Image (cartoon, rainbow, N blue to C red):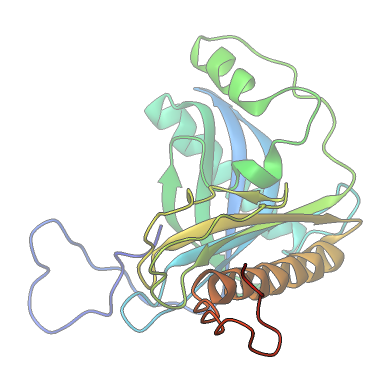
Length: 248
């Protein structure tokens, strides 16, 4: 997501493209379950980008706060976002899991798009007693599935993009918190998605810190594995040389 967004140049938009105004603020998403008439809010997640020279707005990750944490936006803005999402749902007949991506500076907000499907935040949202994909299917069939209480703790995830070309991904014992793992022997080019890392914590700051720690540890581990994988073999020592094997 976001990898296709570029700064505008002079002249008309090229075919298949459109202009958006640049506005200040932080990125959020209102995640909800729709039934064509109303929305049931799952979470207001905070999102961030992994900018690169060619993809300055490339999606990176998201944070779902704990149940009792204060909202990152004022209640009036959250209410306005929910109300606007409800109007769009009623106007379009949208059903199932969806999200409203937006920017907010704390006093105003701007809708950037509606994702009428389960999105990248599903990893941090699907922690209730009821699987969200099951709820999505039920809502699309016109049912009103139970969702269960929101998770008490916070969760975060981030897509790790390759910082350089990986000639061949070595055989790695991937930790359980790493998803979308490349198969051993796969070639991953620079800036391509490498994997997704998940983390949790009692609150948002703790989950985010654990995420950074896990990402740094994973990058170190991959670097060590690649170094070991490509380390030249030690040349065979001459017979009867010090430290060599005596052959009979």
